[in-house]
Length: 404
Image (cartoon, rainbow, N blue to C red; front, side, top):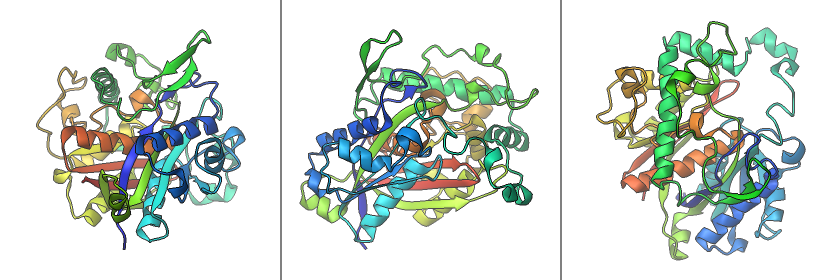
């Protein structure tokens, strides 16, 4: 079996809902990222054998196989095929997995795995409406509820306080702000033309949702929309966003013969099903399975990227998998909720902030997090990275990669 490797990865800056990317079509945004990947690698576009794309809301401007439409808009030739998949929030990560699996099987030597979602222009649930439109027979079999209520139940199960959840959200913004200020993202971003608040042309070259002056006290005053006495708020949940990312996956031997330096290899790629009611806790068995298949433990992992769909997900995962306090905390970080936050959200978990700060453009996030993980491992000269994401209806994806 051939060894799939990551040759390069690039992402767009993540735009706020109705922000700088509000007039940018999703196929245009994804084509921009595909072209940036070609520019960075110098790969002959004819060598790309497939483009696998994650996109959750495949309706309107994101319908009709947006991966293929973006290929036609990009510098890739029309001979390059493409497909679009929906594994909900794990779609971008699943696209990378599928591309890697195709290479490992020997079906191709170069493939792109990526994702795109412009939630400003194609709102979530545009395809089906709300969960009330699902098959009624499903409700006879399972208690299907809104993810916000699932997050509340996760907080109940793990005794997660509002202060702890808000502390994670606040720290996520602080980390993302520091990373942007220190230029950690510059090597992975493909800046793109957009519009400022007044409608003037501007260049978006940073993640737009990050709040440099996030105020923990004000976060504590936000309403709890899912329960009157709840703990889940907009301040400790992911933002609705616009974004795209793409990774070039290749057969290692072919890539090296062509003069490329592979950057990382896959030690494991998994997807699991879990309880469809709580639906957010699949990251726990997914992580355990990914580590088992990689022959590692959490003590071996240098950097974690876990999607901050809700702060409750990350903290519940931490209670199960991070029993020991981490030895360090990022400089200048406010604890926000006592030492428990240092234990459950240590410096190597989402070290540059997560979706609470930079947003969660559904189908793109998995590819964005893989791009962040790759670059952070290199910045630290570290070895092992873990990525995991909760998925609606009770699923989760996870990957372990090793820097080459």
